[in-house]
Length: 171
Length: 299
Image (cartoon, rainbow over all chains, first blue to last red):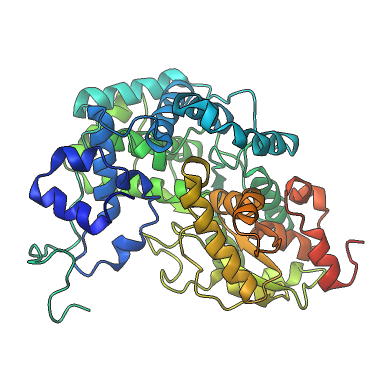
C-alpha cells in the first residue's frame, strides 16, 4: 500500500490527480465496506475507491502488470462477451497478462480445484446474449462509459476541517 | 411465499462455490423450501465489473430482476442468492433504479430497449435470512437427525452479508448463524472477527495481503478452540479453505482447520449424504473433526 486511505482522500481534496490514479492503494480495497459503515462523517469511502478505480481504468493509468486492475478488465471483458464470469478463463487471462512467470506457483491450486470439480474448463454463457448486449449498449449510449458519480453521503454533512477527524459531539 | 433461486457465477455448476449450491438445494429440499432456478440468469456485475463500469453493472443486475419478475407473472417474488456479493450488487441496482434521476431513467430506458421491464416487485434475499426467518429455527430443529453435540463452530459472516445494507442482522455483531448453530445442537464460538474482511480476490492477486487476512481469521478461530469455521459466501469459503495450505506455508504455526459452507453443516446435522453436500469437494476435509467430536458417525 503506497498511501493510506486517509492520505488518498486528502490527496483527492488537494487535487493530486495523477498520483492518486496511478497508486496501488485503491486496488487493495477489497470492497468490504468496514470503513463506510464506521465513518462518523458518513463518507462513502468504498464508493470513492470504486470511483477512483474506474477513473484509473478509463484513463489507462493503473500500475502496469499489477494483477488487480488486470483482473477487473478481464472480468469485464468476459462478462460482456458471455454474460457470465468463468473463473478459470478470467484467472488464466489475468495471469497471462500480469506476467505468467510470476504466477507459475499458482497453477497447483488450479489443478486441485479442477480435480475436485470446482474449476470449469469450458466457459459458461447465457442463452440470450443479444438481449443483454442490447441492454448494455443502450446504457452506454445513454450515459457514456463508467459515468456513475460517487454517491453523496446519506445526510448532508459539512466538509470536515481536518480529514477524518470527527467533530465534537459526533460518536 | 414464492422463491426463485439465483446461483451467481461462483456458486454455479463447476465453480469454486459449487458445494454451496449443492448443499443449499439439498438442505432446502429437506425443510420443504422450493428454490427453482431463474432461467438464463447472467452475472450480477459484482465487485470486479463494478470497478470498470458502475451503471452497466446495475444494468446486468436489472436484467436478472426483470427476468425474475417476468418469470413469476409480474407478481412479487423473492430472489434468493447465496452469494453476498450478488446480494449487495442487486440491492444497489434496485436502489439506483428506484432513486430515479438521470441514472434511473437511463436504466429503465435501456431495459425497454432490450424488450424488458422492471416494476420493483422483486425482493432480494439471502438463504441465511430465508432459512432462519422464513423457514424458522423450529422447523430446522425438527429436521435435525444427528445433533452436532460438542462441535465448536465459529460463525464467519464475512463483509457483505451485513454491510453496507444491514437488512436482516446486526452489522456489528450478527447472530443469525450462531442461532442456527445452536439449533443444530452445536456450540457457537464467541469471537470478534465475524465480519472482518477475508481478503476477497486478493488471495489470488496480491498474495501477501490476501493470505494474511485469511490467516488472521483462521488463527483467531483456532485460538478460541473452534473445530470448524462456517461461512455464507463462496469467496470467504475459498479463501479460508482452498487457500489454507498456502496460508499455513506462510504461517506454519497455524494448524489445519476445516472451513465449510453453513449449508454443508446443516446437511450433516440433517443426516444427508456427504456427496449430496459436496463434502468430497473440500480440500480441507470435514470428516476427521466430525468423527472426533461426534464419536465416529462418519467412520
